[in-house]
Image (cartoon, rainbow, N blue to C red):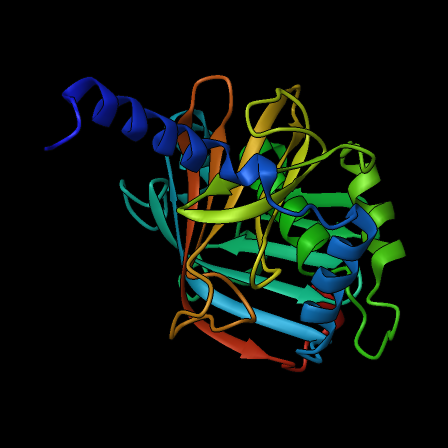
Length: 264
């Protein structure tokens, strides 16, 4: 004889609750170990420089801010423009728009060099663009090749400058993947770093920029265009409005290119 319906429903509810609670019950690596694995993952790529070509799409205030600088390309350029991201390890990153169309001196840009921000054309005044460059420089441009310690100390310092509380840690989900959440819990309104629990790839960095929290999301690791060097796309969301402000879509990635000083 089959069990009563109420018994079956109760069992299903308990099972569902167990699935929801599973991340909280899973083993939590210490933050130092997570950062060591993250550093080893990046250091194993032996990246000293990186060049990524793609397209930047912008929305809202970001598109309005860039419209004057990109007007020479066309009326829609502020919402979609060819772009280049370059990085030199450690701590130097730059984003340029209008690449291949505008003269180099007229391309809107934002650059981080050893923590110092420079740029032109309105991109250096846009919180979303600055957040993207700072985040990528933090999670991709910190690990030094050949550092057997996994660069855990360097990552701790870089994340501390972004306001991430290293003493707080939990497990959560992002983009369908289980992740270590360093800095607090998923819905906390404070700086957070998400690191994939299995691959130790950085997935997300939430931090303050321009007086508001910016959510930088690294999507699609292992794609044909980025591999393990760079994600398929990087999105910047305004946390308060939960609206997309900027998206970098990767089209080509070159590892260890020769970069002139003026490029970065």
